[in-house]
Image 1: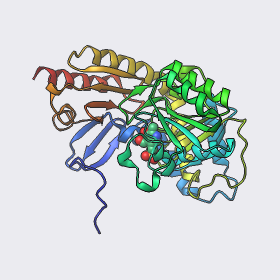
Image 2: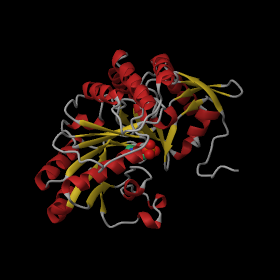
Image 3: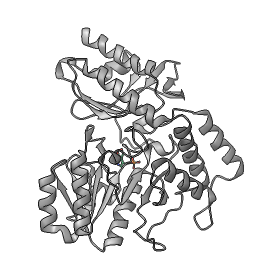
Length: 377
Ligand SMILES: Cc1ncc(COP(=O)(O)O)c(C=O)c1O
């Protein structure tokens, strides 16, 4: 049987990893500033994470959600503490798309409405409603087409107000990334997120903060939406939550009341996933990784700004993007093949940095030196 060929691949086989380093089957070492697509939050193979998963495996790895799973309660408690959203309620699932799918569905249940507002360049995942709210028609099959989703221009407060004025009573939810990831690292301005909060309050809609990529401390705050000083009704989370173990979830404002069977999952919140997610939060707390991401990210951006040919350095914490001018050629490819540094990309010419929050200054310096070399050759 062949694999279904859905991705263009680098011809590299990674066989082991530690911290922000990965090695291929030829023992070539790479610096990982991509984190397997923003997934590696506390570092590859963190010993505490390995130990907690191993210890859990010895006991029980899975049982269904038909029984009490105290690890879920422990996770909800710690997540509340670390995120500062103690009074929210946690629903666990398995992936970012599933988290957003549940968030949107829950908003529709809670409001009794059908209309969703999303924004230009948004990416919310590949399941049916999440992809319908994703601003890329290539990802949508005919069956995903719906007139329930309206795309408004990102960061355009006037367009938001105008749309709510005309359609506010039909809108179930606004879904927005605090920092657009796949769209190319674009920050939602504080005033824009505040305007979303105001419109949702005025018209009885729910504010869904897609924090799948920009959440879990990556931005230098637990949720990048926190920069705006307003609370969302639902936050979706995934990537960094398990440091590579598939686990995701939504946290839900206390005013939204649960009803049995509206949401559900077989695998979500299993024992092993909870152990992985708990280990991540414990390390984020004990190693103060959120503060570290904020500080190191600022330094990296300052250094990048000094590299004149790079354009529009932007981001928060360790979610950084910059535009690569044509004259620099295939810079991302050069970083990988010549300097052995993995980075992410966004079309047409954006390099995205999404490293582990435990990245060191020495490791970040390796990127800056490599870029300087590329600028002078
Ligand atoms: C902002 C955002 N939302 C949702 C998703 C979908 O997550 P997943 O691939 O885990 O379904 C992604 C994935 O890149 C994302 O960046």
